[in-house]
Image (cartoon, rainbow, N blue to C red; front, side, top):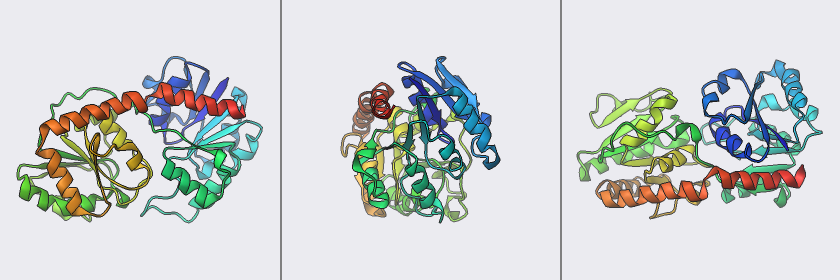
Amino acid sequence: MRVALVPHFNVEYTVGLANALANHAEVAVFAREDLLSPYRRFFAPKVECREAPISRLMATATTTRAIRDYDPSIVHIQNAYTWLIPCLPLLESYPTILTIHDPKPHWGLEQPHSWPIVALTLAFSDRVIVHGQRLREQLLERYRLAPDKVRVLPLGELVPFTGSSKMPEEGNTVLFFGRIYPYKGLDQLLRAVPHILAEAPDSRFIIAGAGDLSRFPELRDDPHFEVHNRHIPLEDVADFFGRAAVVVLPYVEASQSAVLVLAYQHGKPVVATRTGGIPELVDHGVTGILVPPRDSNALTRAIVDLLSNPEKRRQMGAAARRKIDQELNWDGIAEQTLAIYREIG
């Protein structure tokens, strides 16, 4: 079996999948060089990385030719994008899998053309993979697909971020990590901060990620906040998680979350909201604490609970790491993915 993986902006996810699939099949990854280059060193030697001018509309023919020259048994695409639409009819002779990481646009990031792009991509796909039962329900409800066409596989460990932290844990530190978008709920965390400080006065809050922080003037010159408003390089990610006692995901809306998986990889408990597929990843009271979205009181209680209980944090962090090893490992995900390939290949 020859598998063509087309990741676009999901290269960090594709590394783990490609490496595990390469133990059972020939695998080639097709992406632009500027997307591939930061991750090339993480791919297994058996994985072939092929530069393709993906996402540039004028490069449709070149991209399609590169995949057809490889002559795959399966084409596996990560997400639906505008650039992809002209390629699909030209690749129709190949069985196609589509992984949808976000079945609907995130709140605050809605675009009027999102739904038709997904619909067109789904029409050319033989099977669809999502990362949670709730996300499957959303997809089936919106697009009226045959139920057997949509499969659920977990979001696996993010291999490029598996390095150990050089920084010790800071027992009073809460980490908010990732792109600063409205749906991520940073404003919800900031509403909770004064109440957290009232009960845990030595608490500190790290905000790390690119995005617009102009709406949050309270972050300026406040000693309780450490702000890194930039894209976080690969080599720095482990240290942010290493320092954290708790990782908080106060999302008002979500599908799944790579940040949650990163927290688990580094053995950190999470406080997260019950939205999208997140409750399927968080074992409440075991790997973290789930709270309702937009409930700053519940968010406060959960964060203070973990900050004030080091042993509870340790146990939850260990359970989170076990969940990665037992449920979110790539060997198991690759076996399930291969079974889907065989259905249509």
